[in-house]
Length: 266
Image 1 (cartoon, rainbow, N blue to C red):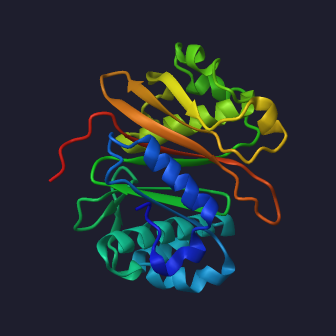
Image 2 (image 1 turned 120 degrees about the vertical axis):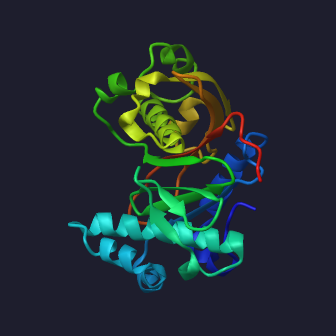
């Protein structure tokens, strides 16, 4: 199961469903057996239903943002999480208990599910697992080149130079991989991304860079281990998603981080 609620398949188009399956396959055997993923895309037709699921405090927060963009991101993220958890528990989205933890992560009330939420543009993704999990979603778009110095462990270059992606896609991928790990660790950028070392990356289903430039629909998918200074290690699956929205053509990296040695369940 990738986490697509039977009653809400319209909110998870096939391109996201396929991406979720690829990610689950990549982390299989390292926390992947109980990993469930879901994605939604914001649309005005969803707003009334999604708002009806929010708790009182969530409703107040959704209305407190100074920009419509931030409010939409919050609403889509909560909707993705609630749909996914309702499907996993056999309940209703409005009955799912969510609370913001002191570290700003979102916990599931009265449950041993670990939850992670990410959003970018009109899209939001959610993931649950019995062990720690971190998700990130980033559009492959221009970034300040100085970001590379902020992100890079001294040994990352040896791994990245062998990737079949252009410089922009590689930079955004590194950002997304490391942010997913920092979210899974629940440290955020209180831990410097420079302390996260990328190990060897395996890339599958990726065409040559020329094929990517010509608009190939073959998605780049892969997996890497990330070693954090201090001892913990994480497996991060990544895949490129091209939703092909009517108003724009955008591509995203969707990444999922799980522990290399998951804790025994139960």
